[in-house]
Length: 446
Image 1 (cartoon, rainbow, N blue to C red):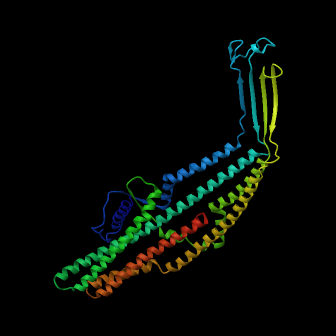
Image 2 (cartoon, rainbow, N blue to C red):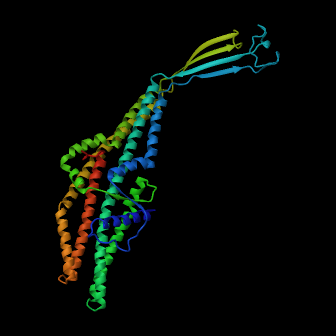
Image 3 (cartoon, rainbow, N blue to C red):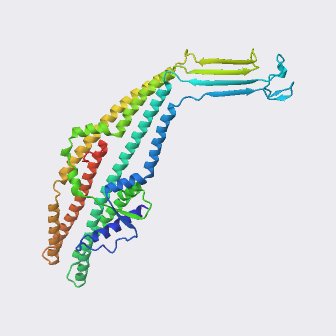
């Protein structure tokens, strides 16, 4: 499945790129062609599709709803219990289940039945405190779900960006392979005529092999990583190829560190990170659990009503009762102490998580600053000049005004620069998405 997915991507990317301009090179004959629908997809559409079709997300959402239902259960009152007892057979009157009075004063002619109603009533607000703990646990489940979504959306965005720039680099390799193949074909003709040395034709063949090897490495990387993960996240059962659509100019304008100071990002992270909210709620839950355990140490009261016919000192007995434990030995001391330790543990974990969140934001911020230094020289004009220079080099090489060594050096310099340029852009955009991930929200969203 992994191979099929990437082959579809490669084929459709070649097909789409070859139709951009009439001057674009023809797709190499050795490119793999598979039948699949091509769907251009934006990042927003990918996220919407992911939210609708990813079964893991839907399953986790049902888990949150199940936890919230427990809050309602915790608020319910205890049910009363009813006990009924009847004599089975009276051997003197020869009656089954006798309930008539019979002859007063002669028990042998009478029957007996007993009705007992009991209701356990929780005191010390146990029900309210239990419901409070259940609500806080439901909130933790919600924050854990939000954190799962944060991680999956981040993975989706990274795969989207990696796939976009990977296909751009793949397009570059295909264009250059076509050019070098044409040169190799011309050299082979001239070699047969004795106009080209074996050393020269070997050198251009080696250049072609190097390009094909680099292309295969990129192809394999896309296949095993971003293409596969992107397909899994979208959970698309159809045989389709998604072609990422990305407006680099819009992203460059959007991703601007000067719009949001580092201190503000740290504050937003402490306020918005769902995993940190879960830690805060865990501390509140632990504190609520202490209060619940203290309430559990207070005995509940059980009310009772009894109606007994012919089983007491009078023929028809009715009585009420009250029952509760006397907290002499067990006042729930161990559970109370244990719950207090849980509060201390949750408090320390919260402090650790707060430090980790700040470090995450700071590390992402520094990473972007370093990447911006590397990408500052990558201008559209410089890339266009580089392409013009390479085209001139190809023309001069064809006219024999440029040596083979100089041409190969120029060719490899262009290839290295363009692939590295795509790689740096990929890393830079991914770094901004990583910053959004660590803050817990889209910091640069207007």
